[in-house]
Image 1 (cartoon, rainbow, N blue to C red):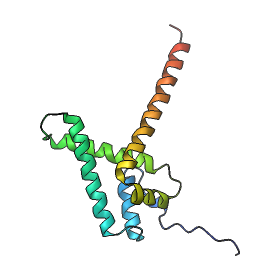
Image 2 (image 1 turned 45 degrees about the horizontal axis):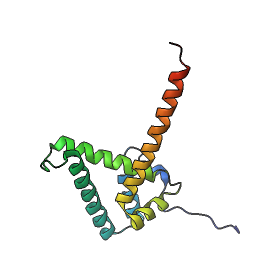
Image 3 (image 1 turned 90 degrees about the vertical axis):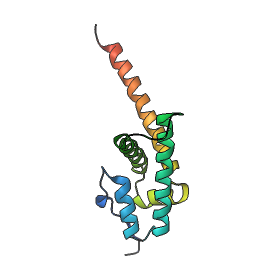
Image 4 (image 1 turned 180 degrees about the horizontal axis):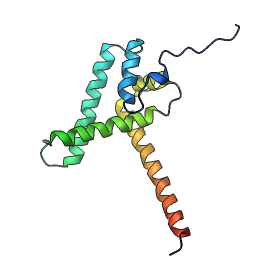
Length: 134
């Protein structure tokens, strides 16, 4: 066997599509790609992002919100980050991105991706609506 085989530390089939970020972090930890300090830094980043999103939700009003709303915002953050991370063919690349650029960068990149997809859908809707007889 003369060719070097690319052995992945994280198997994509071990990653849950609905809990992608969570399972990616778990698998990265199991494979020792990240350590306790990395986990702690990611938790801090998650809380900072949640704080930022809650502030945007409330505006200049108080920072208190119902628990259910906070959970929905947090789930939205996880979804947006996961959407971006799924674009990486190799899960290790997604982990390296998180380690080098952070969760906030992944969130904003995911947000841009969602905005692009929404724009595509809007254009398609307009085109379909124009072709539909009244």
